[in-house]
Image 1: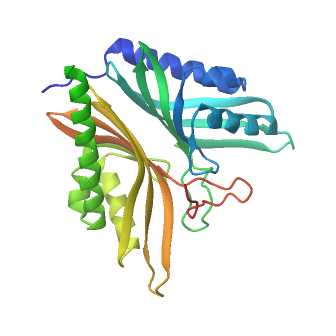
Image 2 (image 1 turned 180 degrees about the vertical axis):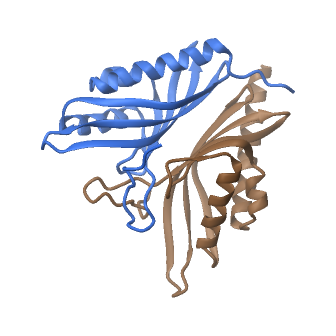
Length: 148
Length: 148
């Protein structure tokens, strides 16, 4: 019952897709961010709500956030792990997101990212994304200052 | 048609596994909870740290979590979505959990859960999981009372 996972080509394709996503993210390019996402994506993001369902909700999330930012966004992907078979894949990483808000306030935070992929019609698509920060039990607030 | 049948079987296996794991959690049975993870599991939990690497570190964290809720508690899984094929699987769900505090007040919280599995020697094992609550970006507070 040895299961053959992580064939090199599938893993390489997923890594390329994550790279493309990060490039689009840095440039605040919403169409680029949506390029490989499923119409029925389920997103758990750092801010409320509890979940976004569907590509339209996913797009709205970006449309609300990007105008509050000044200039490009920094995105460093650390400790990326990709596990892929021929049809299913998942990845996780720690992403450092930095930039400046339109009110001049700078931000620089680490978030945890888990992504689920499916190969549909020969192409990998993102069907699930989970992005979060842990919270501090003492203050009940997001612990965005933790570093790996 | 064989692959399709396998997919159904895989999904059913993952669904059963999640139910078993949830039972172990309700029973606060630490050994049983830990039996679902691989030795090199990497976890992003909702509290305290960015990540937990390896089953020993994660066990310590689970132990601390279980000791926080000593009274009667409940744990439900909602909106479960499973993708499983070729020895790899991932799922996402919204968990409703809570318990009764010493003053009799019932505390309820909703959390997002993503779990990634690999089939190893015929058994599905958790290689990665991610729990979180979203934040209110104005106050920076974690919001556990949000409902789907």
